[in-house]
Image (cartoon, rainbow, N blue to C red; front, side):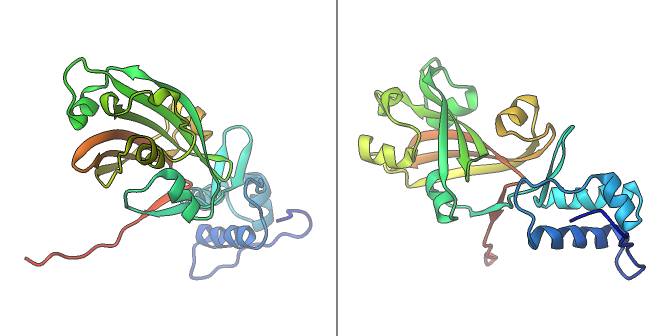
Length: 247
């Protein structure tokens, strides 16, 4: 997407200039701009296409919200990696990413026994003051951060969890080492924006939209895990199949 030479002014037409510029940028992305490649500066786009800064920012903003571009403060705007689509079902992150052709990886940031917060204690059916395993992991897909998760797990069911390899599928580990097959769960989803801490750990600009999943998973009716996961909104989306229930 060179900005040298003659301009390519956007003609008048049924589409607004910002929508037309969005299409031009999208065509350039689809036709050969690789992920993490910088796009021309706002000034270059203004000159090349004869549009205002407001038009350029609006077009780029649409593509950022769609996950096709991302911004890094002080450095510019770059081609995104595209969103990973997931159906809502009970599966480990590792299995979920592999099904989508991405290489999953996990960085274990913390494992230890702590007193869980009220929501986790209630979800797991623990007594006041009872410890649970706290497991914090950064989940990567295709070499880039995808999600940060904080999980609470029932300590009495999982002796020695801190000595286990937690860099792979936790669900596979629970089944193989503890005989606990997670077979059901309840999940709540909401949206947040990345605060400075989350932004740094997920390698996104502060204020980036995040999808938050909070799930309690059970094995044969017994609560085992209560986990909150913050997913990058520019890399992840959810697909749902809906059916209307008869009255």
